[in-house]
Length: 142
Image (tube, rainbow, N blue to C red):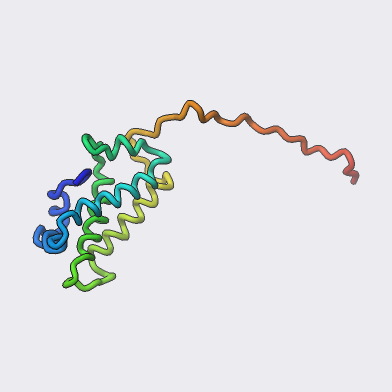
């Protein structure tokens, strides 16, 4: 796993449940995490340096991102278990809905994480000069 540790998943769910849900496919946790990190990168790249945050060797950990990612990965892994019935009112689904709402707020810039590196300014991207327009109409008589 790249950003999360298994201990973080175990702190939110029973280890046995996680192991049973990912036993038939050992890479389920890592692939689910990688998939969600790719989504995080596409949603957060407007505000943050996502390559530095989700670096494979030395990621920059943020508790809110970790919590959101934990709930999304657990939801994916638990939904793989054929013996667990889907329940829209389950605690896992409520946590997933919370995580999706928080991720949406992050992507819109409603929540700003000050401890994460901001997106570097592009030197080729210059701000446009103000636009001037003449709205005077000489042929308008009252």
